[in-house]
Length: 79
Image (tube, rainbow, N blue to C red; front, side, top):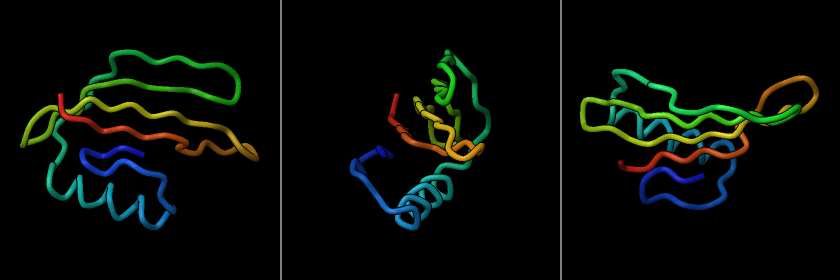
C-alpha cells in the first residue's frame, strides 16, 4: 500500500488507520475513473480523487477470494 509518504505492506488494522487519516485530512469531493480493466478474479481502477486540499492519483487492485472482492493493492499519490 502507498498513501503519500506511507509505502509498505501493512496489516488490515494499520492500513485502515492510514486510509482513515488520509480521508480525514483530505475530504473527498469527487472521483473520476480514468481507466479500468482486468480479468477473471482481478480488477483494477485508476482515477483522480479530487479533495478540498488537491487532486490525487488513485490506483487500486481488487482480487476475488471466496466470492468476495478484496483490495489487494492501493496507491494514493500526489498528482
